[in-house]
Length: 288
Image (cartoon, rainbow, N blue to C red; front, side, top):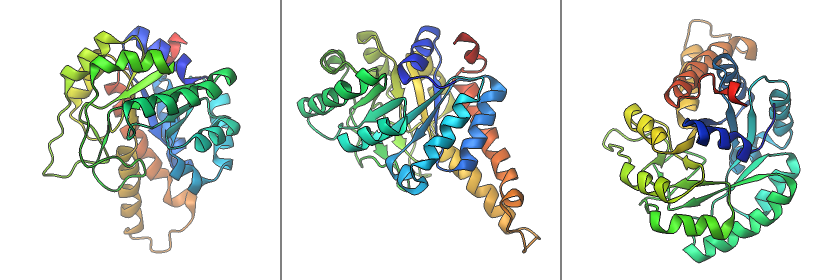
């Protein structure tokens, strides 16, 4: 069933779990995460970045809608890191039920103004809005991007931002980065910032860059108020690693998609199920 971001995260906020937001950058990845969510009875947000949408073309959204409308779990179609008003408008026209406007690189006041403009056009048509306060790091090869130096969210300004913009969820910067961390980089979440922000706000909080962070920190983040976690690199790496294995196998003539991809989908599904368990979203579809 297709629902909005506000609807899907309200239940998560009330019941202390995090909805997985998987960046499904292909039909095979979409198939894998939907199978995982249906088997575990987990709600899901299918996140699509503008660069992914450009590659997949607008027709891909119709495929996601088909999955959502024929699924027994709640599904939200989410624009990930929308960078402009135009990208947001386009996503709404395509049928996205949630959009993110990322103006976090701007000043506090400019971020508010850009976000307010998006809220003013999204809410009247029932589309939810996510914004970002602070900046997410970037480990390298991802479509989501990021910055080389993280600017942590200031908990004291978060509630003011929410009141002045009217957003439905807020992505906060507590030390995560998009992508998989290099071996010489040890990720460490600033859980004290999360706790202060959660204590001072009354809205679902979002964690970007959720791939490859220590499980115990992710679990604690969910307990402290994170209700949506974005996962992109982990599922894509599982898929491509298995595909390399298949291509380097004994069958040099393997070329048919129905031969190449099934095992890749299974490996991706395993990772998705691990994340669903980690986020405490197993069986939570029953709450909707």
